[in-house]
Image (cartoon, rainbow, N blue to C red; front, side, top):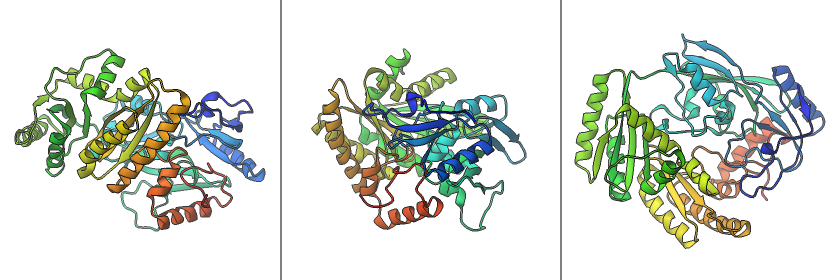
Length: 445
């Protein structure tokens, strides 16, 4: 195991303020024995441990504050085995999404979750229960993990989940660790659920004059027998950032707000039938355009959709949010939040996953001095999360809570539920050694 007291800057830099955190040391284990030994050393010396990966997170979940030890799994990154009989890919948690996609490219299978950063580690996506654009049909990370190996705070090894398709045998411990952001255990290996690649697919862009016209089409699609693999929304302002960043053009198409969706299936005929059904449904709605895409067009438009966030980051610092509301509240929420941002003198860009109510809000700094940026951000974030809670929404759909969303999470969560979470944390990590102070505090502050 390689220990060093020189911690790379990417692990200790606060993503909003740029301030430097404090970490006592970092380890890059390459074996299970090394992971267990590091955790046992930390427990013996009463040190807290934060598990880190590729540092693509957006909520400060791995930011060290009090000289914690860091446990990096970047070097723990082997693809172990492809089990074609159970459609399971066994990997170590430091493997990136890009490496999994590359490995599966020549096979008939794919791993469905598709979060924005392909350089994220698979362990990190499990720790935050990452979503992505295919969640509407194939589910988020939670629905695509069969089994995991987890190390507890005392260094003991725990296998959770299994290759069985059914399980009514006691508590579901696997799902307990997914989304726990490293506060309950260290995820080291995963058995990923694979699926056969669809034999055919088609992407479609539907344009609307205004956001209110878009919502009825979403409801009709989700209430029908159609099962889009992805169902995204954005407006012209959002896609222009991606156009400039990638130096690629969107479509010459009518509309100011757009739905982008993909239909897939086992053969060309079934996809053609879905496309006809979608066209018939949208014909009854207040749309401005309906354009099925050729393969080259589809690849370009999906690249542009995926690059909206990067396009914004290219021109200004931003604070990216991932709130979620019931799908029938998407339009009303965005309209209200636009007013909130305007009143706080912060410009914002809205886009997201129409199929599951996940709204991405990018709050733009645009040259504001650091102190003024932080002040305005604090005001508008409080108002945004209040508005989301009023509509039955939650502060995070796929980024997690980490450090940055803690106060808003505490305001939004039922106190009884928070107390149960604290009890679970204390049961699995009684000394509060694993990623302390993230998601919530053990006691009220």
